[in-house]
Image 1 (cartoon, one colour):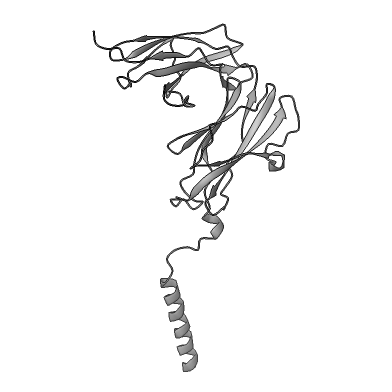
Image 2 (cartoon, rainbow, N blue to C red):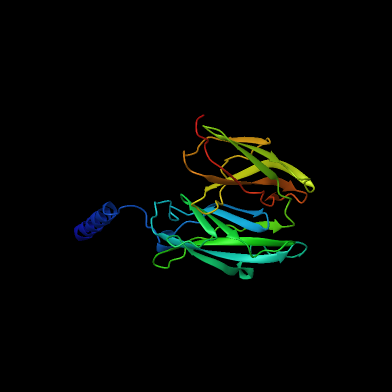
Length: 256
C-alpha cells in the first residue's frame, strides 16, 4: 500500500510539472493562417465594378500577423433574372485575379491596408459576386471572405463639374444631368495630381450633399485634376456611382 501511495504521489507531481510547463492552450496550425479580409464591399462605378476590402492583419486566433503576401479573388457571374443561384456554393466561382501586395497591377490601388480593385470586364444586366482569400509568402491560404456582389446596369448619366481657383482653396460647382429612376445620395469627388495615376478613392469621406464643395488641402505649386460621380440608390435598391464627369484642372492661385 505504501508503494502504491508513493507511485500515485509521483504521478501527481509529474502531472503538476507538465501542467506548469504549459504556456497556454493548444493552438492548432489551421488557426495560425490569415483571418478573412474585412470591410468587403462591391459597387458599380460607371461601367465598371469597384471591389474594396481590408487586408487582414491578424490570424484566426486574433494574434498579429505580418506575413500576408497577397490575395486570390474569385468571381461568379449570373444574369439578373437568373433563378436558383446558390449564393454559398463556391463551385460556381472562377479565379479572377491573384494580387501580390508588393507588385500590384494597374487596376488595383492600395490605401494603407485597404485595396481597391477595378473589374472592367463586366456587362449590364449581370450580377457579379466575389470571394477573397489571403495567402502568405509560404503559399498558405487563409480564410475566405463572405461573398459580396453587385448588380450592373446602365450607369446613371455623368454630372458636370466646374472649378474656380483661389489663393488658399479651390471651389467646385456640380450640376447633375437628368437622373434615371432612383434617389440621389450625393457626389463623390476624385482628385489626383498631374504626375500620378487617377485615384480610385474619393477625396470626400461622406457623399457631398450639395452642389458646391471646397478643397483646401492642396500643396502650393502643384496642379491637380478632378472628376466627380453622382452616388445613387437605383430603382432595384443597389447603390451605384454614375458615369464620370468631365475632368477639370486646378491649383492654388498666386496671391494678388
